[in-house]
Image (tube, rainbow, N blue to C red; front, side):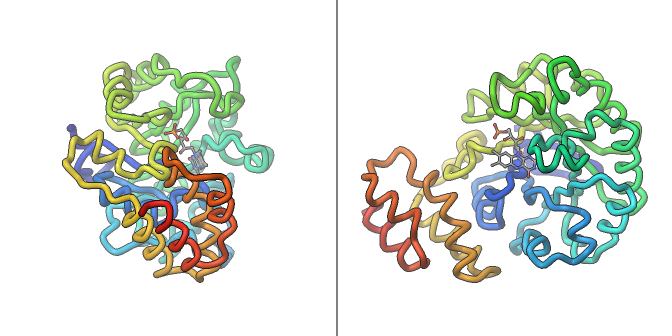
Length: 312
Ligand SMILES: Cc1cc2nc3c(=O)[nH]c(=O)nc-3n(C[C@H](O)[C@H](O)[C@H](O)COP(=O)(O)O)c2cc1C
């Protein structure tokens, strides 16, 4: 397993947990690290909301002791706001700053943020320059192939980000229009890798050790980011790393809940866990009635009682 270096940050291997809104909370990140992920990242966080001190946004910055090195992902479209956000002490605990230039969600795109920036390279460069001016920490950029198949810009865009000072590029090689449909374009990722001097990390469809090997071999990328396959299955990192780690799913879920409970109210934890639970019990024979009960739980005690039935 090769190590990876992003700017001055040395990572112990080349596997990263992807930022995922609604999923890559401090609990999932804890488990990802426990199973060997070299770097974790928060979900995307509005730079503007941070600057305005929005409480819900600040909640997303929770990290656990021992998480470092860890990254925070910011989105927005105003260089000055990124600059101000990076000067905030609340971000001091993050080792790497990742900028979202790939989010396809209409709310984000129509606001001129996320993947919209793939069509405005000048503004994207100004954002990276503002971030580099604000901090000495490595700044990375997460992009997609382009906005649609007629505008595949990953190669030129990645080079432009490198020229603006970015320390690594993360590529999810699908277009914004594709969403999650179709295959990731590993050939494009290979070409981006060959064009760049800074590290390239590939994201998209790394679901098992074989997929990891294929992605590395076909693209030559320096790192691989794992997203959906880690939801409900954070041990994927150990599987790819070939670590002999015992997995106790029920214990992992309890740990996930415990970590979240260190920071958040029970109501918050319960709502947050609902989206994870369906993934944690995937593959188990659970009747629909119990599944429904689990999805409608109102307390941690209720969740644990139902899980006990499922796992016993
Ligand atoms: C529910 C969900 C939320 C996501 N949220 C983010 C996000 O906040 N920031 C980001 O850069 N990418 C986000 N992504 C994209 C992932 O980081 C990743 O690039 C994509 O899912 C492809 O990788 P995968 O096949 O390993 O999931 C999200 C994906 C999913 C499924």
